[in-house]
Length: 351
Image (cartoon, rainbow, N blue to C red):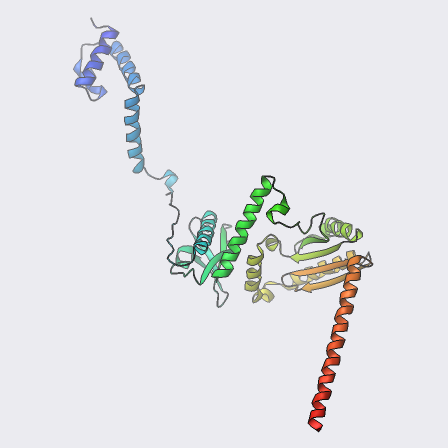
């Protein structure tokens, strides 16, 4: 009679010498009772699972099978785009790779909106086609901003710029990232070459950003309190009026974006938007003139404006008066010099 131990011994010996599959074991010993056979097979399979050599062998098979496995959810995982640049300096190539990596993070398919440098026309193109044959010694590319397409998907707005401009923008980005990293580590701001922020407590000039899309309530309460609290302290205030999307843009990219939008600025600004912006400026003036201040408005209502506010009677106001007086005296001297030259020329003509 077969016992459980003898069945296990027979199976293990048989599997070691003759048996390649578990099903062959049942045909090898037909006289073994089914209950005993099932128990022996269970222990046999468990022994195989606990065998390190067998586990390694199974892992290799799994890895080999995974190569031909169909993609998860029908989506193929694309490899990162690797470009071997044959032109440009090392820094220019690093800047190109950095921008390319950012584009693919935003849009894995590589589709971007590109601005034509000649006509300023925006067209949808793949970044692979855009950078094909680019000479990094002469030009590079940057992301001006990120927009949304008709389906609501994010699309980077890309523009070609001179190589020097791109490398300078990349250097500024690296310095900014390094500064943020050092600040997180607790390094003093002055030691890493960062000046105090414009809206910081130690600055003589405070910067207040106001979006063209601001509501009447926020302007009359939040921004009014923010501006007038600084004016009452006798500090200069620079109010920046701009689009919400341009507020936190890199300075170089902001300048390029503004240059690109100049041609289309008049068509983009509707009559309703123009009226709304005029109302915001008038509301600002009403808020500011509640205190004795001097106001200087610069810029265009079509894109960006700055309102410089100087409290009257402050040291800044005295400096402004001195500067204006100095400019006036300079103009008077230039006028006197011009008259003398005219007199000399007339004398020579008469002689």
